[in-house]
Amino acid sequence: MDYQSWIEGINGKASLYSFDILPDGQYSEIRLMAVNRASEGMILMNPDAPEFYPGIPYRTYWMDLNFENFVYKSAETQEPLYSYVNTRGIWLKGFYIPISDIWDEEPKEQKPVGARTFFCLYVVHFEEQANADSMLQRSTEVSNAVLNIGIKLHESKDFYQSMGEVISSIMDFCGAERCSIYTVDKFSKECIYINSEGIQDQLMDELSSEMGRTPLEIAEAWEKDLALSDCLILDDLSVIEERDPVWYKSMKRHGVHNIVLFAIRHNQEIVGFIWGANFDVNRRERIKETLELITFLLAAGIANHQLLSKLKIKSTVDSLTQIGNRNAMNEFILKFEKGDKERLKSLGVVFIDLNGLKKINDQKGHSAGDKLLKRASSIIKAVYSDDHIFRAGGDEFVIFCQNTTEEEVAEKVTQLKKMADATSDVSFAVGSVYCNGEHDINYVIKTADERMYQDKKAFYSSNPEKSGRGKSFSKIIE
Image 1 (tube, helix red, strand yellow):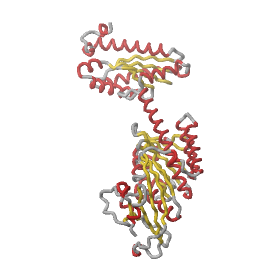
Image 2: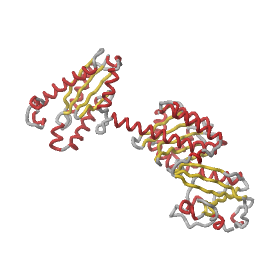
Image 3: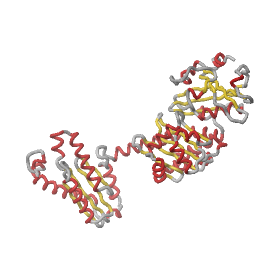
Image 4: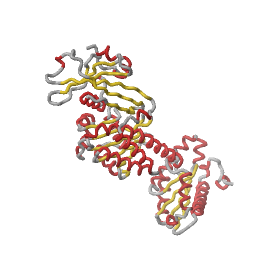
């Protein structure tokens, strides 16, 4: 049979596959029989692969376990199948069409005795944007599941509560014993492990420790395990044993015998994974159809949450020192002004000014001044690691110490100055106030500020050369 002449009559990007079902019921590997000219660039993409011939093993060019399962099922059951998947930013509308065994001309020596040969035609169309009509070509069961999960995604204003409800629904639909969403923020290098009960920091720490990987390294390993696919739905773990022995050992240790792993991509960038364990293998195709659409919905929600988090960080965190900025400090103070009196009963306020920054900026440039600010903030963070630290602006820092004592406030000021004295270039002017009872928070800050200026005045009186102006501090502030 001239496969090539036949397939050139198929509209769209088409390829023809065959395989055998052996006498013992096992499947042979899939063979690529023909590719039409429209899809040659997609199929024959491996420049190191040998020259194509009808019947070449399909894995010579690439490997996608989900694609293989669809080919096997469509051809064996003689039922056409449809898939609509988002793969690395491109939507693939795929049609799997069983072809009757009409090619008796296939060399008999290629077929084992007693084996039956099946053929499947695959026709694919590419779409850069998701098409609603294509998405709706699903069973009622799948459509209802996606609609239900879409509603849960927006029922709660709390992102993590919504994720927990979505995970619970996915777990029920898959008939899985366990399910989670693992978000990945490559900008902050932060990963968050969420299950139906919410964020699970301890579980993520245990998983990381067990596998000897950071949370981000776990995500990077999963992306490699997908092997250019966007999902793995495995009835057994033999593929993972080969691709990722470390993860395989971890799963076996926890009684996992099959898995679902779906990448969640936004603009081709991984933003998370859906992970399920010990799912109902009889629901395999329904799971794939449903999660393909759910990952599309989740990608937008996760990416939006990460964007808002980045904007919040930028608006409340000082980019140079990575501590709270003036906006964050104002929000903190506002909580006191709104009547949170309990927080005022035991409070230390410390106002810190970095001495000599202006001279460094004038003589060595602002790059040197920024380095000095970073070193200074590192000392402050070391001393006040359990307290609320803010860069109020320029060379000024304000610290709020809650649930403390007057002695502890004084001890930390002494420790701060000792650590600064041990350096060659960091020097602080410090003013502190301790409150044991209700006080006007703004008055307390103002008092600490005034005491800091008295300390600064004393410093420059003793070290006029550090001012950078050649005159006493009292003249500078006049």
